[in-house]
Image 1: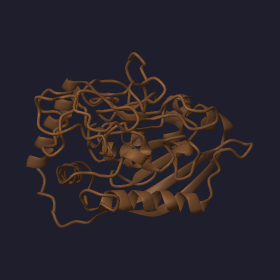
Image 2: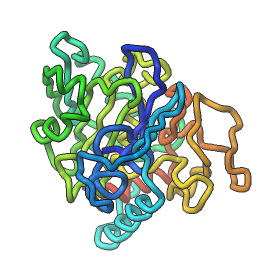
Image 3: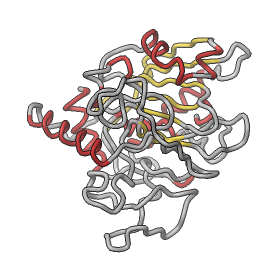
Image 4: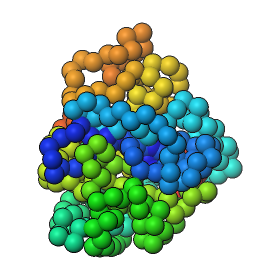
Length: 319
């Protein structure tokens, strides 16, 4: 799944667990399932869309967003090749935007009431996503807008407590819409994972696996220390729209495949000032970028290049 998801620092008991990778997302997912090609099921790696390959788990100590599902340089290159190939066969994206993404929110809760988020919190999460992708916290307006299409509530303690174990069944039963519909699942992902996501390239071979999963405590005011601004959904949606982590490929070219994000050797912890892990490359580490692993209060923007790359993925795989 994301393979670009975020992993969370262990955090306090009872709070959500963490991260980007991004998951299948080339950059960071953590513990869920992934679709091939980018640490995801089936695209390039030939793995089951819901079962990521064995990887060593390494959530950053005390403050990790995620790592188990980061994609390899080879997987990232394969996803990029697929994007370029698809782009040659598709119409160039309309740079003016905006592009509206319908969201179906799946609230999975425990029979004791845990995780049964009210509509106001869900509305706040969607508002945070719209503000972030519009450049409202800083940075570029990516052109993407989100509209809440439906909220589906499922009371199932097993699904809530062990989402990854039941992910195939959950998504097979609940997922709605086509490639253009963002299915956002919320459950208790434990103490090490904040969220996971699939990449656009994975939809063709594993449509039911498509979507974003976040720990319910990562929503605005959800109670996850350092990760409760609603930015986990922003981060994972960035993967869902094709972005890698900013530290993809470290200091080596082509980095995260976006020209206006500085190279970064490794994921950050907290919100480091003046961090420059690739001193021979221009610019300090993009610790404030939504596709990084910094704490939520540290994150505030996407770049124009990231907006363009998301638009390319949208036109090639989701529109």
